[in-house]
Length: 345
Ligand SMILES: [Mg+2]
Image (tube, rainbow, N blue to C red; front, side):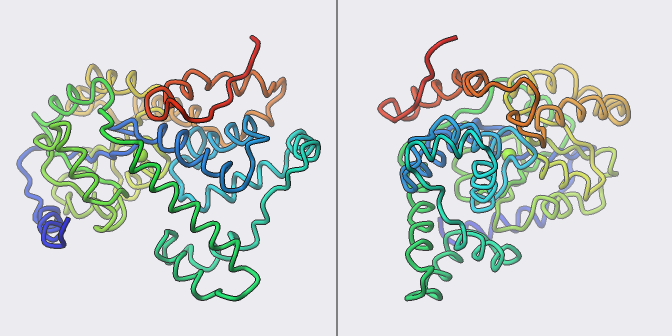
């Protein structure tokens, strides 16, 4: 994609023209497209085990990493921050420590990861700044572990590019967008690069429903909404649709309403939006009890307390609970890939 196309897309957002009474902002990854599950399960998590020789604790690593990246309040957080959470959780669990001791595998030293995150968290955490940091620390004692971190991050991107593509939207997305666009102007708000968004929305013929697509180059999601709304739509006529707490925060920053696509129940969520949520939004009965009730459901689906800290926890039960999802992702995106399937009921 050339910069000219990006410039045009940015202009399209800035010149967003109001044609309808309502505004609906929609997140893309993990919300419209089922892209979070395969990216995490088939790329991020196995690459951690590959690069840090942690296959010996696969069931624990997958359980912890899925909790951090997919099924808790930190869903959708930056990959380097996620890594810190994962190692912290693993290090806290006595049963994991025991398993590692038995097999003689150490937990990676996170000093370099911690310093990188601390130094760059307010700038940007991503391969370009990590690369810069590696150069800066060349010939220091941190160099090799930083290079390994960068190699992991690049390998993740490569795996995603090679294995995970042409992901269709969830069921009922098209129906919802079609219905939504009858009375609302639609805008995509996302932290994914614009080029990928443009391609994915076009590929599935969803682009015709939206007025503009805003990607990571055009600022944060809350800014995207602000630019599109430009104080023209009253806040009770703005709805954000998203799948992560960060999306809810973007809605709050604009005092907009929020409809959650609940992780693990995405199809059901889109169906409910088409059959019920949109009608309430257009009728002006979305705010209040309905908004509160669906937020309770959303918050319950994304707990902050991990399952292994709950009473009566069983690792086997917890691991097996997500087994159908893991198997489905591997069958579809990496049939030859390595995946532990637990025996027994
Ligand atoms: Mg998302």
